Amino acid sequence: MPADTAPAERLFFALWPPRPVREALVQVRAALPRPTGRENHPLDLHLTLVFVGAVAPQVRACVEAAGDGIEAPAFRLRLGRLGDWTKPRIRWAAPAAVPEALTVLVSRLQARLSDCGLAPEKRPFRPHVTLSRKAGPLPPTVPTATPDWPVRDFVLAASRAGRTPSYEVLKRWPLSVYGAS
Image (cartoon, rainbow, N blue to C red; front, side):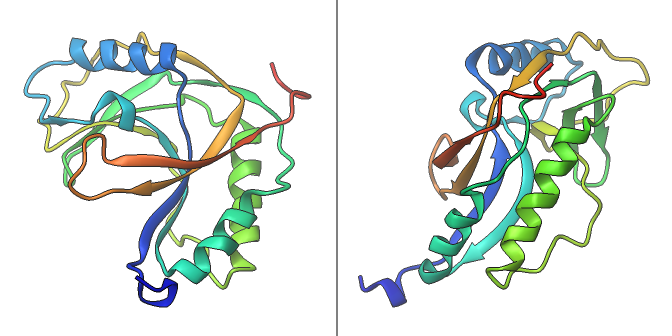
């Protein structure tokens, strides 16, 4: 298929947890009250930084280049909150406090994506890892033994329909080791 007629890809920048964090999130999810709904595949667990959406193949190169040269420090992410959004019926784990390094990374990515002609997200950034969809509401108190995540890189990923896991990491960029705590 010629490049100009290839289907658009749904892309997003994300933090992809290392195996120990991913396994800890699966254990946290298993401890939550039922019904848990449709649990995300363990290899699909991630924290979206910037959702790019469907892009034509000729825009993908610009999106990939947006990650190149991003200067941001590595940081620790304490996923100290568990919750749910009732209307979309999503259960999630989120940081109790959002590290400045995380908001800096998101801002820099959005600025670089604007060079590709992509408008920044209008909704406020609500960092979270989706644990399950179509889940029942959580009771007012739930266990909060969530993992401490040493964030050392970020990725560009694509949604792949009809596959399990549903997401594929396309490219990975390291964060600077200075500023890591």
